[in-house]
Length: 222
Length: 247
Image (cartoon, rainbow over all chains, first blue to last red; front, side, top):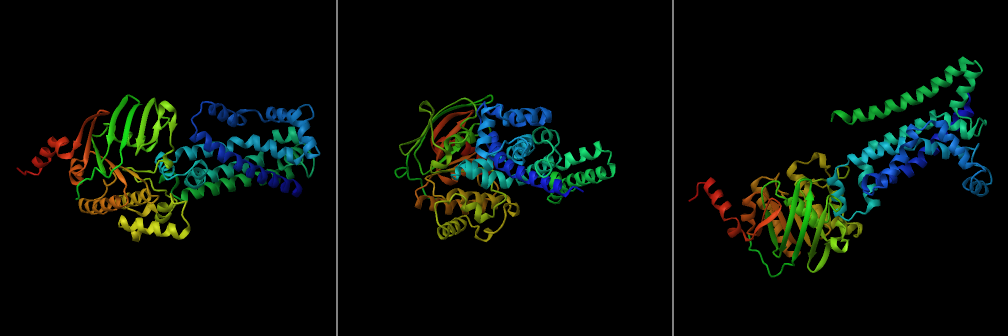
């Protein structure tokens, strides 16, 4: 087992999930509460990574974060190293790639909060920030848990974006998915089975825990 | 019940023109009593009227509106002026209590008391719960309340921040007659003491008579009549007496 890759994968998934939560909660709230027409464009862009081939997204990010663009050059001078082929670059790519997996459950959850509750909070003087953190998030907390679990698992399992913008640098950008790919390429099926089983168990255990929580709470049959 | 005192009440004026799907609300009226009852059949536009007075539904459908209360402009679409619902000193209690399900009764009532310190909040919550006769429910969750109890808590929550205008949309429908009468009696005294003007929406003529209020009769989105309850609802009075077989 490549423990270094496991540790890096968990760090990447944790950092990505934390960034996604910070971005997706306000974004989903704006998409649900806002009425401006241009929000449809924002929602489309936030959903785009869901249908875009990961290699396409990875390629654009590679170009964007590289020395060919002003953004890439600016980030390089700011950080002292290029974002591409670094752990930080992987976090940026993963956050963009997994954005819909955080935003979509939250949009669905916030939209399902009864309008009467939102009205009641507004009548009692709650502004947008208070409305989100004292009403929308607590009432739609199951959607928040879903967003966390899906973002984490999706990041753990990603391959195309990681390979395009991170390459395969041990301890820096080599995740478990890359390790599995290398093992298969080297016909090391024993190790590949173990790596695949670990990735599979991550997903099964987390999803089972998520759905078990829902069932215990009365979930869909309430 | 005590008689309405017109002289002490502020004036609430509303000119509203709003379309909701195929329904058109065209209302121009003035509320100048401590208690005004907006009476009309289901679907006549009463709830829409109340929501627009409260500052809700700003972006739903085409709308022209001007609402003033005590000389202050709350809404004027011609000037693109729309005071946020929480800044109107206006409370709205709907038929569905809409209590926050993740908060206790005490926390629900305290929700609008952000400006008070902890001791002040506690005092105010206790006062409100006592007013609605729900002191023993303070630590319960909304899921463990009956419909009538939830309506009482919604009323306490709406009154806690100290509104000047109270809008009630059939808020006592889940209370039985005696409980409703007792609560309305206490509420009337408290509202008068704290100079809170009230507009109550109902399709029950008995409510209007019980309150001895000024009545605005609304039909198909328009004001059909306005005046003392015995004049505006004379036909309803006869119908009620007929049902009770009282000559």
